[in-house]
Amino acid sequence: MGKYIVRNFVDGDEKRIVELFNRVFGNFSGYVPRTVEYWRWCCLERPDVRRDGIFLLFDEESGNLEGYVVAGLSGNIWEFCCIPSLDVALFLLDRAVRYLEDMGVSAVNVNVPEGCDVLNEACRKAGFARVDVHKMFVGVLSFSKLFSILIEDRKNFFCNRFEEKFCVMIRDAPFWVEKALSIDINRDRVNVFEGSIDSPTVLVKTDVKTLSSVLFGVMNPVHAVLRFKMRVKPFWKTPRFVEFLDSVRLRDAWFWPLGDFG
Image (cartoon, rainbow, N blue to C red; front, side):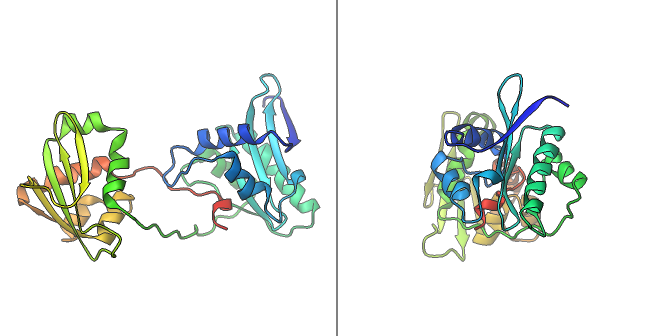
């Protein structure tokens, strides 16, 4: 185990805290970049959070912040974040639990991402029991904007892989969601827009729930087609559209820190 320095939060630590948070949790679905202002509101200004319940762990040699934990007197550990080191995770978790026990808290609740082996192992070794995850409901304001965001960082891949004019017709859409969207892909660009494209090479009919479930990684696009939740014309283009959806949909584990729930 390395040598660490642990201390409580002081003003000015916020910048390094949010930088670590963004680095550790940036690859999880549902991730929203932390800002100093949001972190202060979400953690520091909580009625049950005192500064002596916020612990920061630094590497003694480099001075780098390697983890932090925010423990509330309600028994909730609102944020638990560290580099992928079991020693660091256990050290911080132990410090938070001992603090809450000293404050008379009878039960401790912590939320860690399912896809993070280090934090899950630390919780197991610390004696935490696993309970059902919180249920979150995700709504879409605009499927065309969602597709644009999902495609943005991989435009070159889609341009090299596909040359199609996809048109997706959406049933059961609330009034704020477009009834149709189009994705025009060629060697030079990807254009996503609301409405129907002229002469689509692939026409898809589906519903809001199915399209959302596929894009957010809940439903496999193959299953959506086999269950007739998505109908593709011409039928022989079905593998092509399935490949496109499989390339664009979210695959990373979902995670929201406990502090984002309330």
